[in-house]
Length: 294
Image (cartoon, rainbow, N blue to C red; front, side, top):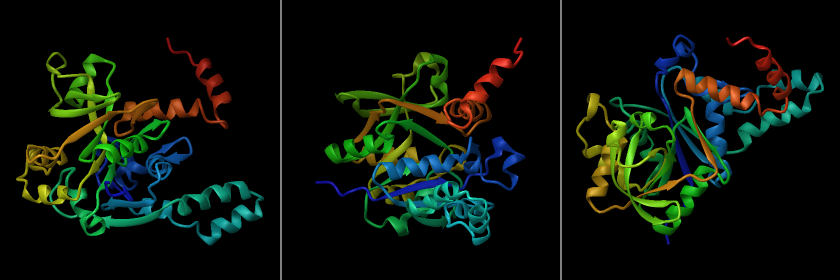
């Protein structure tokens, strides 16, 4: 039996330089997708997967994230009540009630392994999940639930896998060399970071979601700074793999990956969700059809 996954770490300490000047004072994780910020979709994925202890690792100018998941202030409550907007108030109150939130300030060198290390005092000796705060996968069942099912059967490290349809896009991701286990589950032999398309070992990108053992903290501490002088989570995973920890990927079924960390993909995400949202889909569809795109 493997220990139950009860905690999710969401790194949200990056500067969001690709969205400046918008992110000069506002976290990139708070960019709206219609009427919800990106990070709320990530939290909802965790909660819908049965995990309600959410550890958000933040940095400077990230207070808006804490405010968003806090209980609504009394002035807002009074305003909504006086305007007979109880349905909206109920929706807002649900945000703070859906999970247990813990906030940690990031310290140490730059790199995507650093926020993981920052969460060690809260994680202690438990396996845990990691989901990035500026991207998400929309799937049924939720991505994290699919990953937890694989972890409970095989243990080790589990990384979410995404099939890359366009060959030219393979150079944007870490692409895995795989050994098939069963169904959509594979053991990872190695990960090639941002390969040239003709040199990629498969079309499966492994990123976005992780289930990690507590041993990852020791591995991160043993690392020397890697590419760009940064501490990389992938390097720590590779270290544990060399020491005998199996690493699996589950290619997410019935899902779609939304990379809201760059302008073009973010705009695509907003448009797609606006075309699905019950309050906007009809009028927004008419508006798009009215545009002269010649």
